[in-house]
Length: 404
Image (cartoon, rainbow, N blue to C red; front, side, top):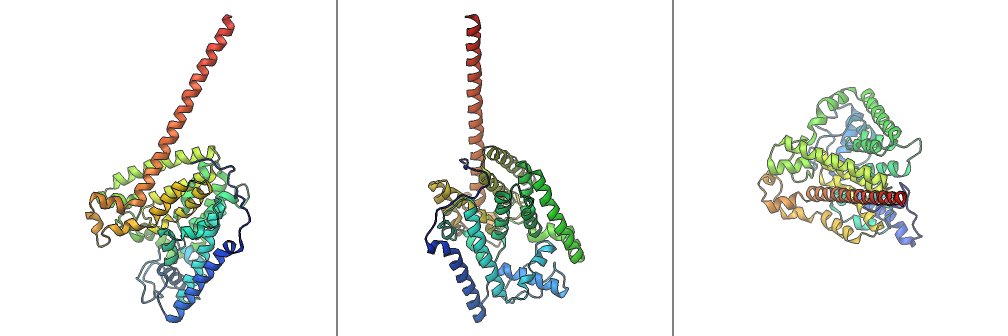
């Protein structure tokens, strides 16, 4: 990736026409209107936002958070609440809303978060409507997921708040709501921001303790059992789990050593790239490497967790990498998954070609990661050779001067 002209600064953009400037608000208003219409008609809307709302209602009614949720609508599958207890407290504003309105609120916040994420990495206004065609994005909106909101918190923290006393706080908040953003604490350490990393860990721990104080029973259950068993972490070979663990399980079955080895390689490669990009002043590139590393190594990474494709598109557009932008959009529309038999265990019998399509997100990310590492390694070797030759030439010249 090419270096950006400044580290962590929001790119200045020229004035845009009134309609593009208002596009995020218009889109948010349309989604809010959808929520109202669906509520009036009694239609189902927002599977994951319904779970968030049910978890919040369980907290209000003193019911177990990590058991059957009594407030789950009849039309919704009986999904468990899989986040830390403090997340249920954070979702309390949804408790007083009809389930469709809960979706609408999250959809509106998601659109604003996506707009902020695109602009934070220097993307033009039209990148927002473009990324709406990405499967991780429209699935995040459709399910009523919180992914894009947490992503915006991390981007704001790492790129904008650097050097302030608040840096690290938002990363800690994001990690407290959903554990996967803890990978960005490692990012802060790798980029020399130790105080920010400690601040993030402090906020994460503080919110965790708050969860214990408010919900002691649920907290004990979550941290001792639910955290490890949620969504069958580490053993889920369903096609929607686009992680290294999911790929290995679909191809080889239960093969923990292979998964561990690939995860270790991904972590080492990502750490190398993050350090290298940071040294070259590419704060956005380094952050995106960490983000996609986190999605790859997590035991469970549903397709909507790949919502980081949105700021990647914005970055490619800002750097005029139009070929890369087209490739990312084509891949992340999710069309490849329609080519393979899915669910009911059919993933374990995929052919080689079906495995290429059904594991597309993971395979492409691994290939790009490996390609970037190889390119940087060759580049560093070339620099070392040039420096060696230059040293030898200078030494010969100095010797010539002395003998002359």
